[in-house]
Image 1 (tube, rainbow, N blue to C red):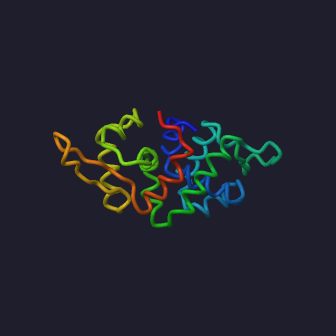
Image 2 (tube, rainbow, N blue to C red):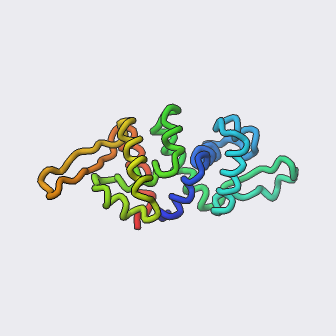
Length: 180
């Protein structure tokens, strides 16, 4: 999977939890998925529409009720859902608010090895400096990212590394996502 698709998937807050639930065997209908994820109906519907648009989910043609459709993973969706489930396995419920933010997972993907700010930005061409800075600060506050200063460089530059839960998540997703 390429980084652009991964960024598109993570742009909806509930996409990864929904995919993880589907991978773990929860029925692909609205009620069970809402109960499992805790998403609001509006956010859930938007995330489901987004996942269908990306080609990760499809309506199950063998399940006929038009008001209560059932969804299933596509071939690509199964691959992404497996990654989402691995992320779910190495994180806890208190980590999900941070994981649902748009840039957390793409930034952690680019931190598979220690990087400078511009090195991270190079892998994520659509991220703004402000969004990257805020994302790094929020992960640093949760001890998912460690910032150190390279004093030997002129001018001194910050080096960011994924640690603790952030490091585990980075190790899980980095081999699966191709950075540009």
